[in-house]
Amino acid sequence: MSDDHLTGETEGGRGVALGTVELAARTERLAPLYDAAVKTLFWGFRLGAAILALGIVVALVKREPLGHEADPIPDVIAMLRAGHASGIIDLAILWFMLTPVATVIVVAASFWRLGDRRYALLSLIVLAILGASVALALNR
Amino acid sequence: MDIVYSLEIGAVAAVAAILGSMLGLGGGVFLVPILTLFFGIDPKFAVGASAVVVVTNSVVGSTNHLRIRFTNPRLAMLLQIATAAGAIAGALYGVLADPRVIYIVFGAVLVYAAVSMVVRSERQVTAPPPGAPDTLRLGAAFRDPAIRQEVGYIPINVGWGMGVGVGAGVISGMLGVGGGVVMVPAMNLLMRVPVKAAVGTSTFMVGMTSVATAFVFYSRGFIDPTLVVPAIVGVFLGGQIGSRLTRRIKAQRLALLFAIILLYLGLSLLLRAFGIEMPGQS
Image (cartoon, rainbow over all chains, first blue to last red):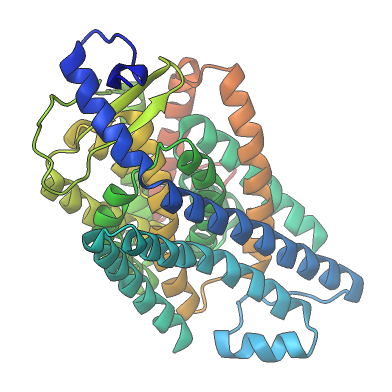
């Protein structure tokens, strides 16, 4: 099949079209990465929203006032076990914050599976930087 | 939960998101000034809330951009090293900084955004020639529905882009905004990335950048659930309304009005840094 099927006749002529077609094919080779990232973000948001909604309902039903400061991460589990709305809401906030971190892990793994070691490594560097900020929050 | 207070914050966040969505700036640019100027909220708590809201907005917005391949994951990861590191540095400074410094920097960013809105420039990116150098394999393509064609591009000036990324990260970390206000023009004008790809890549990046900011503010106790929860809900709803309005109203036609709002908020923050309050503010 001709490369022109992707672009049709372009003003720039065949040379331009070929360059673009090569780039389009390269982008499409990343399809598994795009799909995995979309699934992670989609479900990350849905689950976070569900946890947040649950926390709001529990707070309203129990007439439980929320604190003006999110609990330290190690305390959130204890708050959850005790059934406090604030624990559920803290979990929702942390869930939203961790969703992009999970996406970086998925992107790094996808680059690795696709044989792109360079960008898998760069993604792991991003993960390490984000991990440093998570570590700060854990040591509060 | 204080229902009335939550509804007020949610409504303000929705308005911030509608304005931000119509301008492509994200909600944080409006949320932090409104919360500090009109609700008298400590700027550090406003920045912390904004950072979490920006993360949530990015999670929602990125999904669509990834599906239609506007996002360039290689470019995002490369630039993200610079912006995430900058964000941690900016946030570590932001949590300790005198609030007046935050007012001054935020005010300057808003004035810059207002001016750039009036003098908006956009570079039309031409397709790369065959065999164009792409040593970092950053070149990509997407199908532009407006022209019904594949658009290919190879980013250039990557080193400069990373340098700007550090600055965008520092601003994002200090102010809780996404950094797209800096990164989108930088990618387009400096790196010759088409605007749609720049917006798609930036939307994906700002989530990661703001995560770094949000965790630093979390570590210092500046995440207030009574602010964050209604702000997330308000920004989500406002973003949906804003994206629908954007399809009906040409935001460019309202550029001057939006620029005046940004200028007013920016000057208000600059004046607040010197202890001067404008009428109607708290």
